[in-house]
Image (cartoon, rainbow, N blue to C red; front, side):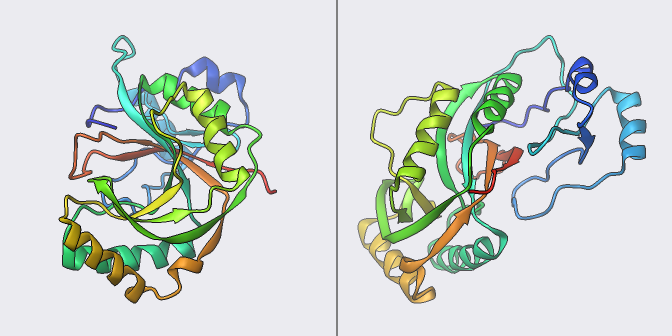
Length: 252
């Protein structure tokens, strides 16, 4: 998970070999993530690319964001893969998350189910692995089990997701492509609150979550998008967290 080092330049020969690649947008906004990326036209992008040799390109389903970067410097950052809920579900979850933060504090972040945990890679390698991992994956359904609490900052209050075959296999498939190995079994969940709370505070937050959204424990939604995020776990403000690419999964 990241620092704020600018992103890399997409190789020109790759763009030439993929005629379906089309411009999309030049950069992603800083946290909070719910603000949409800046949209630019092909003409503007062409002018920008010629002056700075930076490009924003889209290849097939993946939506990728590239910025200026010294190609000689192969710096590594931490990256994660997230399963992204549909916009209407995300809006519902954000309202619940905001209600919890108003009482218990904590940083703002996008609703997501972690598919691949944080792993250190170069930008080029992370994007390549993300593209290959997503290729051929199909959309699946995520169903909430219950609201639960954890023992550390990034698993403070969350909803557990039923570990169905598709949920578990998607994580295993993507983790294999990324070379990610966890010391603990995969526990699919969607965090509602990050923070270092006491046990009593976590219990109250857990109870409040069920009050703010009485049917949260019966929530079920389709997962049709995966996203690659740069996520520096040392940055508990999450200000350096950044979406790098998004992929639309094939219909199931």
